[in-house]
Image 1 (spheres, rainbow, N blue to C red):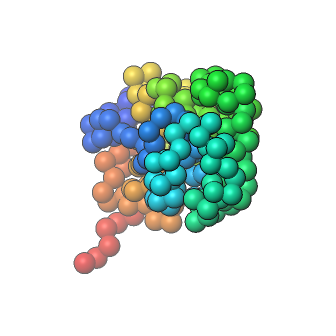
Image 2 (tube, helix red, strand yellow):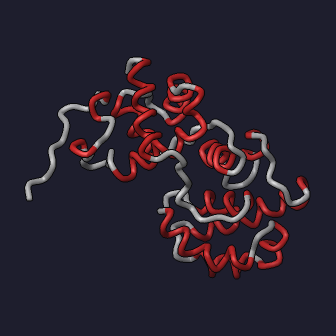
Image 3 (tube, rainbow, N blue to C red):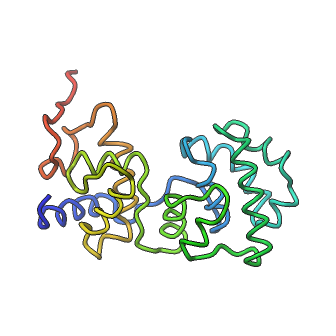
Length: 214
């Protein structure tokens, strides 16, 4: 995609949604970290349903440890892979209390050392909680990057590096959310809704889909 088209691509997404937000519900960086760990291979809607009561009672790593593994599992049992995720949440909470005084580290390397936290999760926390211009490549962003030609790659890391290189500095802060939301609601996996896409003219995907007949 040409540089001038990339800028217009993001400009249109920004105009349509000037202040995009994560669809996960959270009250502080620790709750966000827990929510993102729980969201792996799960929907934000499902995670939010499970965490509303949990986050009403638990706001810190110390409170999570006081709650304990069994009660945490009861809260998140509707989420896929909940056993493993619950164990990771307890383990990372122990580390946060012991090594960081209950605070969330703002360094990617330290975040990635926590159980259940990979590069994508670390990028989400850095971007959403701390405003860092990171781009967390999930299935939606991977698809949008490749399908549109904005940043092609065979792996999430290749797409991430391509997006960071292609995205103008003034759009990096919110690029993560614009691309996720675009992939989730317009540039869908099975059938992209090209007929209502505001950036379709810059997209490399062919042939464009047409609106379904009434």
